[in-house]
Length: 273
Image 1 (cartoon, rainbow, N blue to C red):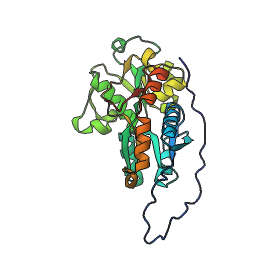
Image 2 (image 1 turned 180 degrees about the vertical axis):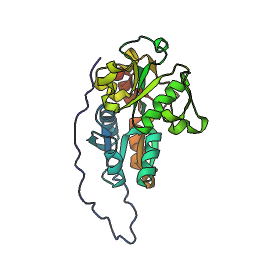
Image 3 (image 1 turned 180 degrees about the horizontal axis):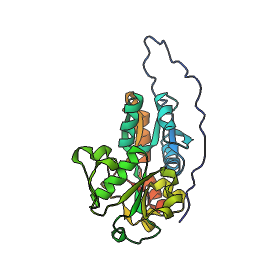
Image 4 (image 1 turned 90 degrees about the vertical axis):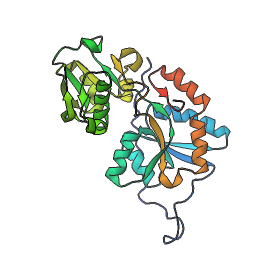
């Protein structure tokens, strides 16, 4: 399978924002009707928006991409108006960012699902995991909870009912196989897979390591996952005509076909779900 390496692109955010109009009376400026600046993370999100940009160009809309190598800066740049939109995150991550940073960023259009997979160098089936098997989890709260949700959905653990959306290993109330959970840096889990019996790996990091979620996983996140990705904007721009034009370009048949042919089930278009 083609290896999708993360381009270590660094986006230098401008040190100061240009004021627009009288500070006492002006509102957030409308997005340029002929151009939109979109932030993406390197890899599949970047590749897909590049295709969406070609579709948008046919409708008279120029799409400028800014590529980031982490998960925080695209939202920071959006909130500071260095971007008009971004495309890289699911709603649970966005909700946590808004709560932690006091921002008002909103999802406006579904994009893709990067199905999280469970992988093992030692076992060919999730059912082969022995009692007391070691299991690697991403150590960030959002993706750690996501991995636990996948295990619960498939009957391996049970999470306390009131903790399902923000579960940690301390919220597991039933663990029949006595899995031993080891929290690891998400980006490093592919390199540490041989040190555990199984591990949950985000699709982007799996692809970066040359691992195929569809072919190599022993358990794959289902299509009814709450972790579908979105195009995200500032709340005041959610109905902006330029944003709607970009969503239309992204959710086009051309983009859907590209995703299906390029990623072969490792990345799934989600807007028709």
